[in-house]
Image (cartoon, rainbow, N blue to C red; front, side):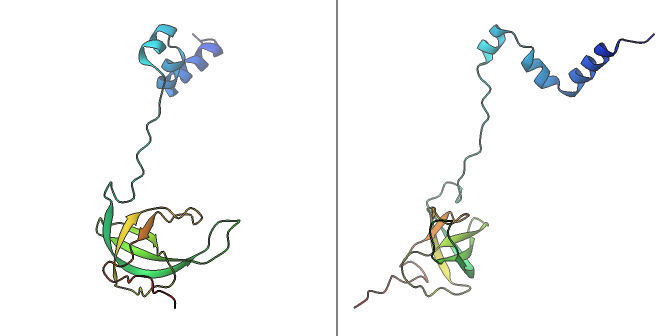
Length: 134
């Protein structure tokens, strides 16, 4: 005995999208009881909630900012004590960082450079203070 094509189509849809199908078929009372469907986003914490992290410089980089700005942002690739490798911005004019130097990084974005979410702290470990011009 053959089934009509409409019932076959409905059956395959129910098997393929069961959770979506149940959501669509919910009554108003069921939707009121469960509340709106809210997607939970994982928190973005580059240092896992810590304010500072020590790291070892792997490489010095020069990054270009986004469209309206034009400059060369001095950055370093750092292996942090948390185990992550991230790009950190070196603020101020001039720096003495080389490979294997130790720096302290804090959370802070550079708004015009994509992918840079950390800043180095001047005057701690191997990164000296900014030299005052005379």
